[in-house]
Amino acid sequence: MHIRHFFFSLGYALRGVWYVYRNEQNFRFQILAAIIVGILAWYFPLNDAERILVLLLIMLILILELVNSAIEKFTDIVKPRLHQHVQIVKDIMAGTVLVASVGSIILGLMIFVPHIIELFGL
Image 1 (cartoon, rainbow, N blue to C red):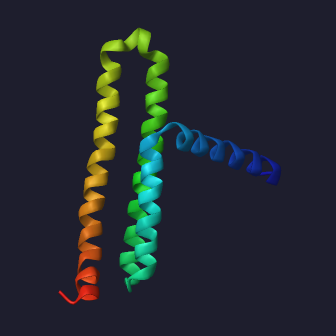
Image 2: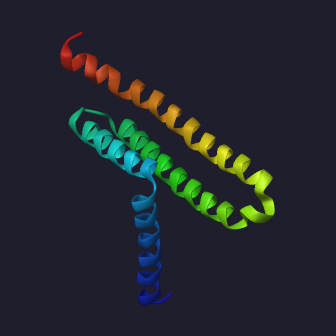
């Protein structure tokens, strides 16, 4: 592998992430949520396993949103030929992101609530 090819590939990947960031409001919201959760993970005395889980959950949501955006763009291309199925595919992908997001929120609450309770002496 040539280093030049690596940097071209990296550039293409960053261009894809930037495209989704610019064009998808949900992705921007998820980036903001990831930053807030990252700050909380740094502020509270989480153990290593909790920090790893928080990072994995953040990555899972962002990856799923990128995949969702890619599939939406692709289905928009094939829409004239497969119109009756396109909305179902989009709904399934949105549901996938929703399920992962709700699960991440639940796990995040399980991790952070005890630290918040301790902070406020409740």
